[in-house]
Image 1: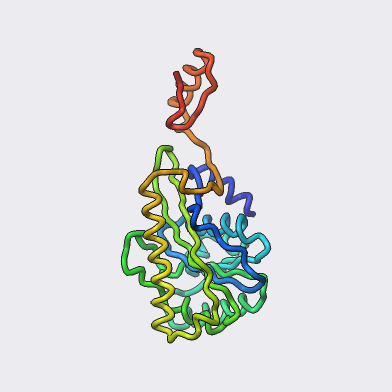
Image 2: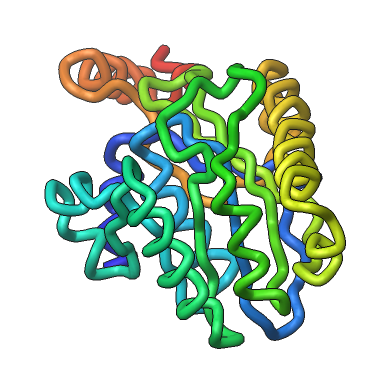
Length: 246
């Protein structure tokens, strides 16, 4: 199933890149909560590909809007579970399901903590309180912030950018009252998003490591002409935007 998302991603996106400073630390055995902002529909695919690349020893799960899960049933086959985001009952179900998932040491729960699509520049982030309360149900977990951003650089397809923050121990977070705990989680993610945005704006690929590469070039008649021009001049065709066709 991961291979399906990998093919889909590389067909429609140019690359998945991780900030050099945002590589995840090697974690000790134990449940993990990864929480992030929620800038786009592509976040689900980024979760799947990132989990496969950096947390292969973990079973990964993620809550998803129940209505959305009905529309994209394929996510249910790879660890997504439906949550009613508009009701108190939905919040209680999220905490119950999250606690059950995190009861095993080899599981990771990935959460779009804003609970809605939101522009990457929006401040404050407005994280939902459930991510802070979940720690109470899984005090032995490690909590990792994950910043996500998308942008267009030189190629036709968009670039997906990610960065992990420093892991926080659930026990340490429990020493804070709920409002302070939520504020700590939000501040950590906000700082990372600001750092990641600065690197994305630089348009400098050396600041990132490539996780997955798509297909460069525009395709169709445009690339066909460039390929023919390169062949006539005895040159190897480079489909990237900066590649030479003549």
